[in-house]
Length: 250
Image (cartoon, rainbow, N blue to C red; front, side):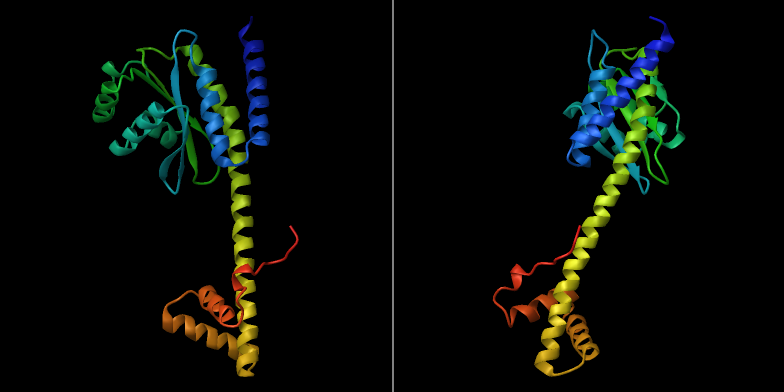
């Protein structure tokens, strides 16, 4: 089979599977986990097994969001502890970083010595291009020297390009969900505060502005959140305050 048709078929297959993962997973955590497991199965050579994880850095802090197994996570945690390594370098430079044989690697000496003691013999870091200040990388570990071939690297880079697109989509969906959750929480808080203001107006026969001032002063003097003070006001007049609900259309 010629290389070009093979790579085209592989790219289309990866894209299809990633699209299915977005549709089938219930949240970002499940998606990332499926991504790590899929990458390990796709990139493992027939005669051996590789360990994969996905690292995302937001606000310059790297976090392993998913791993194919516990060993992959442990390797990433080692890298974070030493503050540098092939995968962090891939994220920082936007370039694929390959360590074919850790026994001959002179970069990041302390980290390399630590991973070699864990049985890792070759490492590949593939950058995933995101948006804004967020960066990510696909991290691949093999227990064999030269355990990741040139063909494996080509597949990993192709997978990285395809998965980066899906990762950007998943992160956007996550941000939209977080914004929706924050809006819903804000509306619930607003409902409690508005009801408490009405109670204060009725009890003190005062204006809305005066009731708001009373509520804010109570919050400040007691060093308690405004929403919690409002909930206390409602509880003082209703035994069912905890059952308050906010009604709005999705």
